[in-house]
Image 1 (cartoon, rainbow, N blue to C red):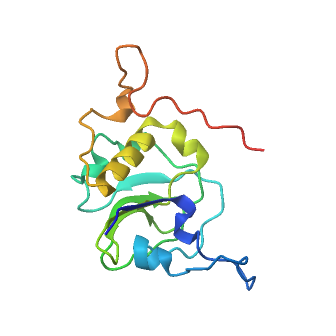
Image 2 (cartoon, rainbow, N blue to C red):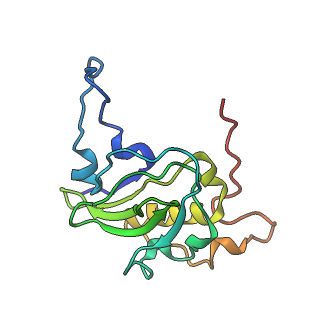
Length: 178
């Protein structure tokens, strides 16, 4: 099987809302999240509180988390309702907002074809401004592709190359939303 990596709305990218039929030449695949990603997306909390992140039980040594300090970044997007995950999915990060149950926000899975799957419901545009998030995402992509994670220290330490540039995929300045 081929690797699959999904970010944020990939969990429901093939599901239409309501009863509107898909455009001609297109199809829906509402089971994609469960079958391929190992998830269980069924809505999200409203925008508002920042999502606090913690490492899921048993995931601290996973290569996707190498050099990542989840306490050093937060998510600015709404917390997705993903629990419970499919039985073979392995949670990596848990997201929490005040007065709501915690939810898995990142996990691994094996696709029906046997490929490695990495998914995260994180990825709101401001999340990309944070070096630890970018490092986490890069590690997830490398892991899904069967490559080793980079050997650098924590992204939150502001590691720079000899020219003073950030080494974790460079500086990210999201475009203005309008």
